[in-house]
Length: 574
Image (tube, rainbow, N blue to C red):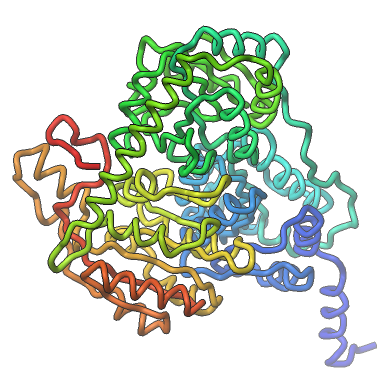
Protein backbone atom coordinates (compact mmCIF):
# COMPACT_ATOMS: atom_id res chain seq x y z
CA UNK A 1 0.00 0.00 0.00
CA UNK A 2 1.35 3.37 -0.95
CA UNK A 3 1.56 6.06 1.80
CA UNK A 4 -0.24 9.33 1.21
CA UNK A 5 2.06 12.30 0.70
CA UNK A 6 1.10 13.78 4.10
CA UNK A 7 1.85 10.61 6.07
CA UNK A 8 5.60 11.25 6.24
CA UNK A 9 5.08 14.70 7.77
CA UNK A 10 2.62 13.27 10.30
CA UNK A 11 5.05 10.52 11.19
CA UNK A 12 7.86 13.08 11.63
CA UNK A 13 5.68 15.29 13.82
CA UNK A 14 4.74 12.32 16.01
CA UNK A 15 8.38 11.33 16.29
CA UNK A 16 9.43 14.85 17.31
CA UNK A 17 6.67 14.97 19.94
CA UNK A 18 8.45 12.23 21.90
CA UNK A 19 10.66 13.54 24.76
CA UNK A 20 14.18 14.25 23.55
CA UNK A 21 17.50 14.84 25.27
CA UNK A 22 16.96 18.56 24.69
CA UNK A 23 13.87 18.34 26.91
CA UNK A 24 15.73 16.27 29.50
CA UNK A 25 18.41 18.97 29.66
CA UNK A 26 15.84 21.74 30.05
CA UNK A 27 13.89 19.81 32.69
CA UNK A 28 17.02 19.06 34.69
CA UNK A 29 18.04 22.71 34.63
CA UNK A 30 14.60 23.80 35.77
CA UNK A 31 14.44 21.14 38.48
CA UNK A 32 17.77 22.35 39.83
CA UNK A 33 16.84 26.00 40.17
CA UNK A 34 18.05 27.37 36.82
CA UNK A 35 15.57 29.84 35.32
CA UNK A 36 17.71 31.40 32.57
CA UNK A 37 20.62 30.73 30.27
CA UNK A 38 23.08 33.13 28.61
CA UNK A 39 24.11 32.40 25.05
CA UNK A 40 24.85 33.14 21.46
CA UNK A 41 22.46 30.89 19.57
CA UNK A 42 23.90 28.00 17.61
CA UNK A 43 22.32 25.34 15.43
CA UNK A 44 20.84 23.31 18.29
CA UNK A 45 17.32 24.47 17.49
CA UNK A 46 15.46 21.78 19.42
CA UNK A 47 17.27 22.85 22.58
CA UNK A 48 15.95 26.41 22.30
CA UNK A 49 12.41 25.12 21.91
CA UNK A 50 12.85 22.84 24.91
CA UNK A 51 14.22 25.63 27.09
CA UNK A 52 11.34 27.89 26.05
CA UNK A 53 8.78 25.17 26.75
CA UNK A 54 10.20 24.65 30.27
CA UNK A 55 10.02 28.36 31.09
CA UNK A 56 13.76 29.04 30.99
CA UNK A 57 14.60 32.56 29.81
CA UNK A 58 17.27 32.85 27.13
CA UNK A 59 19.46 35.97 27.18
CA UNK A 60 21.05 36.42 23.76
CA UNK A 61 24.31 38.38 23.79
CA UNK A 62 26.42 39.59 20.87
CA UNK A 63 29.33 37.23 21.57
CA UNK A 64 29.99 34.10 23.55
CA UNK A 65 32.49 36.03 25.69
CA UNK A 66 29.84 38.56 26.64
CA UNK A 67 27.34 35.81 27.46
CA UNK A 68 29.88 34.13 29.75
CA UNK A 69 30.56 37.40 31.57
CA UNK A 70 26.84 38.15 31.95
CA UNK A 71 26.35 34.70 33.45
CA UNK A 72 29.38 35.16 35.69
CA UNK A 73 28.08 38.43 37.12
CA UNK A 74 24.59 36.96 37.51
CA UNK A 75 26.05 34.08 39.53
CA UNK A 76 28.16 36.38 41.71
CA UNK A 77 25.18 38.59 42.60
CA UNK A 78 22.73 35.74 43.26
CA UNK A 79 25.26 33.37 44.81
CA UNK A 80 23.75 30.56 42.70
CA UNK A 81 24.91 28.67 39.61
CA UNK A 82 24.33 30.27 36.21
CA UNK A 83 24.41 28.58 32.82
CA UNK A 84 26.05 29.61 29.56
CA UNK A 85 25.93 27.85 26.18
CA UNK A 86 28.25 27.66 23.18
CA UNK A 87 27.86 25.80 19.89
CA UNK A 88 30.57 23.38 18.89
CA UNK A 89 33.85 24.64 17.50
CA UNK A 90 34.33 28.43 17.56
CA UNK A 91 31.43 28.97 19.96
CA UNK A 92 32.81 26.48 22.47
CA UNK A 93 36.32 27.92 22.07
CA UNK A 94 35.00 31.41 22.81
CA UNK A 95 33.20 30.16 25.92
CA UNK A 96 36.35 28.45 27.17
CA UNK A 97 38.44 31.55 26.53
CA UNK A 98 36.07 33.72 28.55
CA UNK A 99 35.85 31.47 31.61
CA UNK A 100 39.14 32.59 33.18
CA UNK A 101 37.58 35.40 35.20
CA UNK A 102 34.88 33.10 36.57
CA UNK A 103 37.59 30.60 37.50
CA UNK A 104 39.66 33.21 39.35
CA UNK A 105 36.58 34.60 41.12
CA UNK A 106 35.20 31.19 42.19
CA UNK A 107 32.01 31.75 40.23
CA UNK A 108 29.66 28.73 39.87
CA UNK A 109 29.16 28.66 36.11
CA UNK A 110 27.84 25.72 34.11
CA UNK A 111 29.16 25.83 30.54
CA UNK A 112 27.12 23.62 28.20
CA UNK A 113 28.52 23.11 24.72
CA UNK A 114 27.33 21.01 21.84
CA UNK A 115 29.74 18.94 19.76
CA UNK A 116 29.55 17.67 16.21
CA UNK A 117 27.39 14.63 15.63
CA UNK A 118 28.90 11.34 16.76
CA UNK A 119 28.22 10.06 13.25
CA UNK A 120 30.88 12.37 11.78
CA UNK A 121 33.31 13.15 14.60
CA UNK A 122 37.00 12.56 13.82
CA UNK A 123 36.22 13.06 10.11
CA UNK A 124 37.18 16.74 9.84
CA UNK A 125 33.58 17.89 10.05
CA UNK A 126 33.05 21.63 9.62
CA UNK A 127 34.00 23.49 12.86
CA UNK A 128 35.03 20.28 14.65
CA UNK A 129 37.41 20.74 17.61
CA UNK A 130 38.61 18.61 20.49
CA UNK A 131 36.80 20.69 23.10
CA UNK A 132 37.57 19.29 26.59
CA UNK A 133 41.27 20.28 26.56
CA UNK A 134 40.27 23.92 25.99
CA UNK A 135 38.26 23.87 29.22
CA UNK A 136 40.77 21.96 31.34
CA UNK A 137 42.47 24.94 33.01
CA UNK A 138 39.26 26.92 33.69
CA UNK A 139 36.95 24.23 35.10
CA UNK A 140 36.99 21.94 38.10
CA UNK A 141 34.85 19.20 36.47
CA UNK A 142 33.94 18.07 32.95
CA UNK A 143 31.67 15.42 31.48
CA UNK A 144 30.27 14.32 28.13
CA UNK A 145 26.74 13.05 27.57
CA UNK A 146 27.18 9.76 25.72
CA UNK A 147 23.81 8.18 26.62
CA UNK A 148 20.40 9.76 26.26
CA UNK A 149 19.18 8.28 29.54
CA UNK A 150 21.97 10.04 31.48
CA UNK A 151 21.51 13.59 30.12
CA UNK A 152 19.37 14.84 33.01
CA UNK A 153 21.59 13.16 35.56
CA UNK A 154 24.74 14.80 34.24
CA UNK A 155 23.11 18.23 33.98
CA UNK A 156 22.04 17.94 37.62
CA UNK A 157 25.53 16.84 38.58
CA UNK A 158 27.03 19.80 36.75
CA UNK A 159 24.84 22.29 38.62
CA UNK A 160 25.60 20.61 41.94
CA UNK A 161 29.36 20.42 41.32
CA UNK A 162 29.66 24.06 40.20
CA UNK A 163 28.37 25.28 43.57
CA UNK A 164 29.84 22.58 45.82
CA UNK A 165 32.73 23.37 48.16
CA UNK A 166 34.79 26.17 46.61
CA UNK A 167 32.58 27.19 43.66
CA UNK A 168 34.06 27.22 40.19
CA UNK A 169 32.99 26.64 36.57
CA UNK A 170 32.20 23.20 35.16
CA UNK A 171 31.76 22.04 31.57
CA UNK A 172 29.33 19.61 29.92
CA UNK A 173 29.64 18.50 26.27
CA UNK A 174 26.58 17.17 24.42
CA UNK A 175 26.88 15.83 20.84
CA UNK A 176 24.46 17.37 18.33
CA UNK A 177 22.79 14.10 17.44
CA UNK A 178 22.47 13.12 21.09
CA UNK A 179 20.46 16.30 21.72
CA UNK A 180 17.93 14.97 19.19
CA UNK A 181 17.67 11.45 20.63
CA UNK A 182 14.62 10.17 22.46
CA UNK A 183 15.29 10.40 26.20
CA UNK A 184 13.74 8.02 28.74
CA UNK A 185 12.24 9.72 31.78
CA UNK A 186 15.28 8.86 33.91
CA UNK A 187 15.55 9.73 37.61
CA UNK A 188 18.43 11.77 39.02
CA UNK A 189 19.42 13.34 42.29
CA UNK A 190 18.59 17.06 42.42
CA UNK A 191 21.23 19.56 43.48
CA UNK A 192 21.48 20.27 47.19
CA UNK A 193 23.63 22.32 49.56
CA UNK A 194 25.55 20.23 52.12
CA UNK A 195 26.30 21.51 55.61
CA UNK A 196 29.47 23.64 55.43
CA UNK A 197 32.48 22.51 57.50
CA UNK A 198 32.86 24.12 60.92
CA UNK A 199 36.18 24.66 62.73
CA UNK A 200 37.15 22.27 65.49
CA UNK A 201 36.92 23.43 69.08
CA UNK A 202 40.71 23.18 69.41
CA UNK A 203 41.21 25.42 66.35
CA UNK A 204 38.87 28.04 67.81
CA UNK A 205 40.64 27.88 71.19
CA UNK A 206 44.00 28.34 69.47
CA UNK A 207 42.82 31.49 67.66
CA UNK A 208 41.38 32.87 70.91
CA UNK A 209 44.75 32.36 72.60
CA UNK A 210 46.63 34.05 69.77
CA UNK A 211 44.26 37.03 69.85
CA UNK A 212 44.72 37.36 73.60
CA UNK A 213 48.48 37.69 73.13
CA UNK A 214 48.18 40.16 70.27
CA UNK A 215 48.31 43.95 70.65
CA UNK A 216 47.68 44.89 67.02
CA UNK A 217 45.49 42.18 65.47
CA UNK A 218 43.85 42.51 62.07
CA UNK A 219 41.31 40.51 60.07
CA UNK A 220 41.91 40.18 56.32
CA UNK A 221 38.62 39.12 54.71
CA UNK A 222 38.47 37.73 51.18
CA UNK A 223 36.00 36.54 48.59
CA UNK A 224 35.31 33.42 50.67
CA UNK A 225 33.42 35.53 53.21
CA UNK A 226 31.04 36.74 50.50
CA UNK A 227 30.72 33.31 48.92
CA UNK A 228 29.63 32.02 52.33
CA UNK A 229 27.16 34.92 52.69
CA UNK A 230 28.93 35.65 55.96
CA UNK A 231 29.44 39.43 55.91
CA UNK A 232 27.14 40.00 58.90
CA UNK A 233 28.91 37.21 60.78
CA UNK A 234 32.29 38.79 60.07
CA UNK A 235 31.07 42.19 61.28
CA UNK A 236 29.79 40.58 64.48
CA UNK A 237 33.17 38.89 65.01
CA UNK A 238 35.08 42.13 64.46
CA UNK A 239 32.85 43.98 66.92
CA UNK A 240 33.06 41.24 69.54
CA UNK A 241 36.84 41.03 69.31
CA UNK A 242 37.45 44.76 68.66
CA UNK A 243 39.64 43.93 65.66
CA UNK A 244 40.02 46.18 62.57
CA UNK A 245 39.13 44.62 59.21
CA UNK A 246 40.90 44.88 55.88
CA UNK A 247 39.47 43.20 52.81
CA UNK A 248 40.93 41.99 49.56
CA UNK A 249 39.52 43.49 46.38
CA UNK A 250 37.43 40.34 45.92
CA UNK A 251 36.30 40.51 49.54
CA UNK A 252 35.14 44.13 49.36
CA UNK A 253 31.77 44.23 51.11
CA UNK A 254 32.71 41.77 53.84
CA UNK A 255 32.33 44.78 56.15
CA UNK A 256 30.65 48.13 55.37
CA UNK A 257 33.44 50.61 54.71
CA UNK A 258 31.78 53.29 56.81
CA UNK A 259 32.03 50.98 59.83
CA UNK A 260 34.49 52.23 62.51
CA UNK A 261 36.49 48.98 62.25
CA UNK A 262 36.84 49.04 58.46
CA UNK A 263 40.30 49.88 57.09
CA UNK A 264 39.39 49.45 53.41
CA UNK A 265 40.99 47.33 50.69
CA UNK A 266 44.54 46.01 51.01
CA UNK A 267 46.91 44.87 48.29
CA UNK A 268 48.14 46.14 44.96
CA UNK A 269 44.98 48.19 44.30
CA UNK A 270 44.51 50.08 47.56
CA UNK A 271 44.58 53.39 49.32
CA UNK A 272 48.01 54.28 50.62
CA UNK A 273 46.81 54.16 54.25
CA UNK A 274 45.40 50.61 54.08
CA UNK A 275 48.68 48.91 53.30
CA UNK A 276 50.55 51.07 55.83
CA UNK A 277 48.20 49.91 58.59
CA UNK A 278 48.32 46.30 57.39
CA UNK A 279 52.10 46.21 57.76
CA UNK A 280 51.85 47.23 61.42
CA UNK A 281 49.67 44.31 62.51
CA UNK A 282 51.30 41.70 64.75
CA UNK A 283 48.59 39.09 64.03
CA UNK A 284 46.45 38.71 60.91
CA UNK A 285 43.47 36.38 60.81
CA UNK A 286 43.06 35.61 57.11
CA UNK A 287 39.55 34.43 56.22
CA UNK A 288 38.57 33.26 52.75
CA UNK A 289 41.45 34.46 50.60
CA UNK A 290 44.25 32.49 48.97
CA UNK A 291 46.72 35.35 49.60
CA UNK A 292 47.55 35.78 45.92
CA UNK A 293 49.72 38.50 44.43
CA UNK A 294 47.00 41.15 44.06
CA UNK A 295 45.67 40.71 47.60
CA UNK A 296 49.12 40.76 49.21
CA UNK A 297 50.74 43.58 47.22
CA UNK A 298 53.01 41.11 45.46
CA UNK A 299 53.44 38.84 48.50
CA UNK A 300 54.58 41.56 50.90
CA UNK A 301 51.43 41.56 53.06
CA UNK A 302 51.12 40.57 55.80
CA UNK A 303 54.70 41.40 56.78
CA UNK A 304 57.16 38.54 57.06
CA UNK A 305 57.32 38.92 60.85
CA UNK A 306 53.54 38.98 61.31
CA UNK A 307 51.81 35.96 62.82
CA UNK A 308 49.26 34.62 60.32
CA UNK A 309 46.30 32.31 60.85
CA UNK A 310 44.71 31.30 57.53
CA UNK A 311 41.16 29.98 57.28
CA UNK A 312 39.90 28.51 54.00
CA UNK A 313 37.55 25.87 52.63
CA UNK A 314 40.38 24.41 50.55
CA UNK A 315 43.24 22.75 52.45
CA UNK A 316 45.55 23.26 49.46
CA UNK A 317 45.13 27.05 49.67
CA UNK A 318 46.49 27.23 53.22
CA UNK A 319 50.18 28.12 53.31
CA UNK A 320 50.47 28.03 49.53
CA UNK A 321 51.89 31.54 49.07
CA UNK A 322 53.58 32.12 52.43
CA UNK A 323 54.34 30.45 55.73
CA UNK A 324 51.47 30.58 58.23
CA UNK A 325 51.51 29.86 61.94
CA UNK A 326 48.16 28.06 61.91
CA UNK A 327 45.73 26.83 59.25
CA UNK A 328 42.05 26.02 59.65
CA UNK A 329 39.86 24.27 57.09
CA UNK A 330 36.40 25.75 57.60
CA UNK A 331 33.58 27.73 56.06
CA UNK A 332 34.01 31.46 56.64
CA UNK A 333 30.59 31.86 58.25
CA UNK A 334 31.04 28.87 60.55
CA UNK A 335 34.43 30.21 61.64
CA UNK A 336 33.14 33.71 62.34
CA UNK A 337 30.16 32.48 64.36
CA UNK A 338 32.18 29.97 66.38
CA UNK A 339 34.96 32.42 67.12
CA UNK A 340 32.59 35.25 68.06
CA UNK A 341 30.82 32.97 70.52
CA UNK A 342 34.13 31.92 72.08
CA UNK A 343 35.25 35.56 72.43
CA UNK A 344 32.07 36.88 74.03
CA UNK A 345 33.49 36.82 77.56
CA UNK A 346 37.07 37.66 76.62
CA UNK A 347 38.16 41.14 77.82
CA UNK A 348 39.39 43.76 75.35
CA UNK A 349 42.81 45.01 76.43
CA UNK A 350 43.88 48.65 76.61
CA UNK A 351 46.47 47.96 73.91
CA UNK A 352 43.73 46.67 71.61
CA UNK A 353 41.58 49.77 72.23
CA UNK A 354 44.54 52.04 71.51
CA UNK A 355 45.24 50.15 68.27
CA UNK A 356 41.60 50.47 67.11
CA UNK A 357 41.50 54.18 67.94
CA UNK A 358 44.72 54.79 66.00
CA UNK A 359 43.39 52.93 62.98
CA UNK A 360 40.11 54.87 63.05
CA UNK A 361 41.86 58.24 63.31
CA UNK A 362 44.22 57.52 60.44
CA UNK A 363 41.43 56.20 58.26
CA UNK A 364 39.32 59.31 58.98
CA UNK A 365 42.24 61.58 58.08
CA UNK A 366 42.72 59.74 54.79
CA UNK A 367 39.02 60.16 53.94
CA UNK A 368 39.37 63.91 54.39
CA UNK A 369 42.43 63.92 52.14
CA UNK A 370 40.54 61.96 49.49
CA UNK A 371 37.59 64.36 49.50
CA UNK A 372 40.01 67.29 49.17
CA UNK A 373 41.51 65.69 46.06
CA UNK A 374 38.04 64.94 44.66
CA UNK A 375 37.07 68.61 45.02
CA UNK A 376 40.16 69.99 43.29
CA UNK A 377 39.23 71.90 40.13
CA UNK A 378 40.09 70.39 36.75
CA UNK A 379 39.86 72.01 33.30
CA UNK A 380 38.55 70.05 30.31
CA UNK A 381 38.44 66.72 32.15
CA UNK A 382 37.02 65.12 35.31
CA UNK A 383 39.13 63.75 38.11
CA UNK A 384 38.35 60.03 38.65
CA UNK A 385 38.27 60.79 42.39
CA UNK A 386 35.39 63.20 41.72
CA UNK A 387 33.57 60.57 39.66
CA UNK A 388 33.81 58.05 42.49
CA UNK A 389 32.79 60.61 45.13
CA UNK A 390 29.71 61.75 43.17
CA UNK A 391 28.78 58.16 42.37
CA UNK A 392 28.80 57.29 46.07
CA UNK A 393 26.77 60.38 46.90
CA UNK A 394 24.00 59.76 44.37
CA UNK A 395 23.59 55.97 44.50
CA UNK A 396 21.77 53.86 47.06
CA UNK A 397 23.84 51.78 49.47
CA UNK A 398 22.43 48.55 48.03
CA UNK A 399 23.11 49.52 44.42
CA UNK A 400 25.79 47.50 42.63
CA UNK A 401 29.12 48.79 41.38
CA UNK A 402 30.93 46.75 38.72
CA UNK A 403 34.52 47.65 37.81
CA UNK A 404 36.94 46.53 35.13
CA UNK A 405 40.49 45.40 35.75
CA UNK A 406 43.50 47.74 35.80
CA UNK A 407 43.01 51.36 36.80
CA UNK A 408 39.21 50.94 36.91
CA UNK A 409 39.57 48.26 39.57
CA UNK A 410 41.77 50.57 41.60
CA UNK A 411 39.57 53.67 41.26
CA UNK A 412 36.51 51.74 42.34
CA UNK A 413 38.07 49.22 44.70
CA UNK A 414 40.25 51.58 46.72
CA UNK A 415 38.13 54.73 46.62
CA UNK A 416 34.44 53.80 46.36
CA UNK A 417 33.19 52.94 49.87
CA UNK A 418 30.56 50.21 50.06
CA UNK A 419 28.06 51.03 52.81
CA UNK A 420 26.18 47.76 53.02
CA UNK A 421 27.44 44.31 54.02
CA UNK A 422 27.48 41.70 51.29
CA UNK A 423 28.07 41.56 47.56
CA UNK A 424 27.38 45.04 46.19
CA UNK A 425 30.79 45.39 44.51
CA UNK A 426 31.92 43.21 41.62
CA UNK A 427 35.30 43.45 39.96
CA UNK A 428 37.02 41.86 37.02
CA UNK A 429 39.36 39.28 38.49
CA UNK A 430 41.78 39.98 35.64
CA UNK A 431 39.96 40.28 32.31
CA UNK A 432 39.97 43.63 30.50
CA UNK A 433 36.56 44.48 29.05
CA UNK A 434 34.70 42.39 31.65
CA UNK A 435 32.79 45.22 33.32
CA UNK A 436 30.36 46.22 30.57
CA UNK A 437 28.71 42.83 29.93
CA UNK A 438 29.07 42.14 33.66
CA UNK A 439 26.97 45.15 34.60
CA UNK A 440 24.22 43.80 32.34
CA UNK A 441 24.29 40.41 34.07
CA UNK A 442 24.45 42.07 37.48
CA UNK A 443 21.41 44.23 36.69
CA UNK A 444 19.45 41.16 35.57
CA UNK A 445 20.25 39.55 38.92
CA UNK A 446 19.44 42.61 41.02
CA UNK A 447 16.14 42.84 42.92
CA UNK A 448 13.59 45.37 41.75
CA UNK A 449 14.68 48.93 42.48
CA UNK A 450 18.36 48.06 42.78
CA UNK A 451 20.54 49.58 40.04
CA UNK A 452 23.87 48.41 38.68
CA UNK A 453 26.63 50.85 37.67
CA UNK A 454 29.87 50.11 35.83
CA UNK A 455 33.24 51.84 35.75
CA UNK A 456 35.07 50.90 32.57
CA UNK A 457 37.84 52.55 30.60
CA UNK A 458 37.53 53.27 26.91
CA UNK A 459 40.03 50.49 26.23
CA UNK A 460 37.93 47.93 28.10
CA UNK A 461 34.64 49.21 26.71
CA UNK A 462 35.87 48.60 23.18
CA UNK A 463 35.74 44.84 23.71
CA UNK A 464 31.94 44.66 23.84
CA UNK A 465 30.47 47.78 22.22
CA UNK A 466 27.97 45.64 20.34
CA UNK A 467 26.25 44.72 23.59
CA UNK A 468 24.78 48.19 23.74
CA UNK A 469 22.18 46.50 21.53
CA UNK A 470 21.82 43.72 24.13
CA UNK A 471 21.14 46.30 26.84
CA UNK A 472 18.39 47.89 24.75
CA UNK A 473 16.82 44.67 23.47
CA UNK A 474 16.64 43.16 26.95
CA UNK A 475 15.75 46.55 28.48
CA UNK A 476 18.48 46.35 31.11
CA UNK A 477 18.57 49.68 33.04
CA UNK A 478 22.25 49.50 33.97
CA UNK A 479 24.37 52.66 33.94
CA UNK A 480 27.78 52.39 32.26
CA UNK A 481 30.35 55.08 33.03
CA UNK A 482 33.21 55.13 30.52
CA UNK A 483 36.34 56.87 31.81
CA UNK A 484 37.62 58.00 28.45
CA UNK A 485 41.26 59.07 28.09
CA UNK A 486 41.65 57.73 24.54
CA UNK A 487 44.36 55.37 25.69
CA UNK A 488 45.30 52.30 27.67
CA UNK A 489 46.09 54.35 30.77
CA UNK A 490 48.02 51.78 32.82
CA UNK A 491 50.47 51.24 29.98
CA UNK A 492 50.79 54.96 29.20
CA UNK A 493 51.58 55.76 32.84
CA UNK A 494 54.02 52.86 32.95
CA UNK A 495 56.00 54.27 30.04
CA UNK A 496 55.91 57.74 31.60
CA UNK A 497 57.14 56.79 35.06
CA UNK A 498 58.85 53.43 34.85
CA UNK A 499 60.61 53.85 31.49
CA UNK A 500 61.63 57.48 31.53
CA UNK A 501 58.76 58.92 29.51
CA UNK A 502 59.65 57.09 26.29
CA UNK A 503 56.07 56.22 25.38
CA UNK A 504 55.38 53.74 22.58
CA UNK A 505 52.21 55.53 21.49
CA UNK A 506 51.15 52.98 18.89
CA UNK A 507 50.47 50.39 21.63
CA UNK A 508 48.75 52.82 24.02
CA UNK A 509 46.75 55.46 22.20
CA UNK A 510 43.33 55.35 20.53
CA UNK A 511 41.43 57.97 18.58
CA UNK A 512 39.09 60.03 20.76
CA UNK A 513 35.71 58.34 20.31
CA UNK A 514 32.57 59.94 21.71
CA UNK A 515 31.00 56.78 23.09
CA UNK A 516 27.88 58.70 24.08
CA UNK A 517 27.10 59.29 20.40
CA UNK A 518 27.54 55.59 19.71
CA UNK A 519 25.25 54.68 22.61
CA UNK A 520 22.64 57.20 21.54
CA UNK A 521 22.40 55.54 18.12
CA UNK A 522 21.54 52.28 19.88
CA UNK A 523 18.82 54.12 21.83
CA UNK A 524 20.38 54.46 25.30
CA UNK A 525 20.25 57.59 27.40
CA UNK A 526 23.71 58.98 26.66
CA UNK A 527 25.81 61.97 27.62
CA UNK A 528 29.42 63.09 27.24
CA UNK A 529 30.82 65.28 30.01
CA UNK A 530 34.13 66.97 30.79
CA UNK A 531 33.38 68.57 34.17
CA UNK A 532 32.39 67.25 37.58
CA UNK A 533 29.27 69.42 37.58
CA UNK A 534 28.13 68.03 34.24
CA UNK A 535 28.86 64.48 35.39
CA UNK A 536 26.67 65.02 38.44
CA UNK A 537 23.83 66.25 36.25
CA UNK A 538 24.16 63.41 33.75
CA UNK A 539 24.27 60.79 36.49
CA UNK A 540 21.11 62.21 38.08
CA UNK A 541 19.36 62.00 34.71
CA UNK A 542 20.57 58.43 34.14
CA UNK A 543 19.32 57.32 37.55
CA UNK A 544 15.96 59.04 37.13
CA UNK A 545 15.49 57.59 33.66
CA UNK A 546 15.40 53.93 34.77
CA UNK A 547 16.57 52.76 31.32
CA UNK A 548 19.87 51.68 29.79
CA UNK A 549 22.34 54.55 30.06
CA UNK A 550 25.93 55.43 29.22
CA UNK A 551 27.97 58.43 30.36
CA UNK A 552 31.23 59.08 28.51
CA UNK A 553 33.50 61.02 30.89
CA UNK A 554 36.62 62.77 29.62
CA UNK A 555 39.53 62.00 31.97
CA UNK A 556 43.25 62.76 31.88
CA UNK A 557 45.51 59.89 30.88
CA UNK A 558 48.28 61.28 33.11
CA UNK A 559 46.19 60.66 36.25
CA UNK A 560 47.49 57.68 38.22
CA UNK A 561 45.07 55.35 39.96
CA UNK A 562 45.66 54.16 43.56
CA UNK A 563 47.95 51.26 42.70
CA UNK A 564 51.23 50.34 44.35
CA UNK A 565 52.95 49.70 41.00
CA UNK A 566 54.54 53.15 40.90
CA UNK A 567 54.99 53.82 44.63
CA UNK A 568 58.76 53.55 44.42
CA UNK A 569 58.83 56.23 41.70
CA UNK A 570 56.40 58.88 42.94
CA UNK A 571 54.29 59.96 45.90
CA UNK A 572 50.56 59.24 45.78
CA UNK A 573 47.99 61.65 47.17
CA UNK A 574 45.36 58.97 47.80
